[in-house]
Length: 307
Ligand code: AMP
Ligand code: MG
Image (cartoon, rainbow, N blue to C red; front, side, top):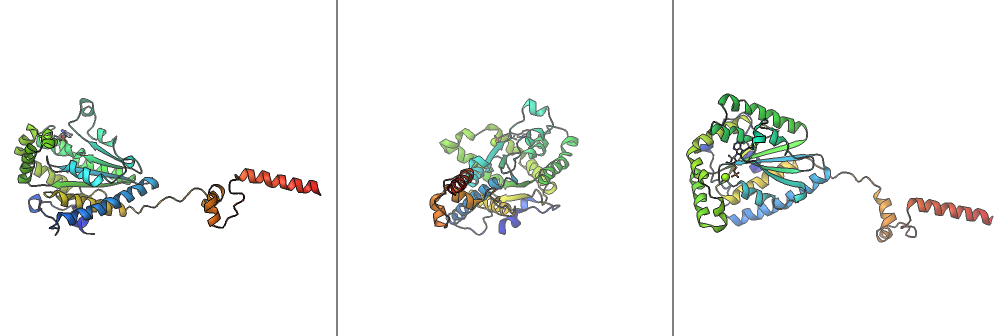
């Protein structure tokens, strides 16, 4: 299929974000058409999630990373809305607490990885420990530079234990970011998102792009691929993410578990009308097997008495 192949970072490839067009929209000129496709994908995702929950064999971890205003929240809202909350959770990773900082940096992450049957979305992730931490020198280079290897091993561990991992970098331009910040000034329901820090972080744009380049180049594998999603157009971003998720889940080769009971027997015993349609004798449909046995014995006894 298309976008999965197009946007996937091949293991070992040298990534150049400048050459990746954040405004790409895959030949869709029309937002409405893309919205229809998104709806279709959302419905399919909902079916696949139900199957995953029932099968209870695989787990799915979705990692979302982006620059500020890159659209992580919007992606979660639009792509995941068709899913059943019972089988799905979203975990956001903020500045670590003192307790979290007192442990290794993967400690807080591992606690939230999905159990079998579940989908978990990470809104930011362990990658912050080689992104913001690197850009702001929160630990020395000799510490963060070893983390790519840790992260690859950590994700390998999860994959070896039945977790499918997909990672999305929502790629926007620096101008697009400023436009989104500006839009927030005008929209009452978005003003709460405005922060001084976001504007200050823009000064580090190039450092972040470099840090992302290293992440994408060093940490994309077949068992845990990175996808760079052109994300200037929100509707295209949603469509591309949803399509890749559908394909990922279809490749998981899931099946509903076999029933553990004899369905014909259950129908015969408890569902008279169904049993009748299926041509089972109806007289005894409400009898439990033990009752039937008793009745049989009684009948047998009576007959014997008669003799
Ligand atoms: P937001 O996602 O906008 O609510 O912001 C969360 C903030 O937490 C961002 O500024 C992140 O850079 C920051 N953050 C997340 N993980 C870490 C980390 N491991 N170390 C330092 N800052 C972090
Ligand atoms: Mg923010």
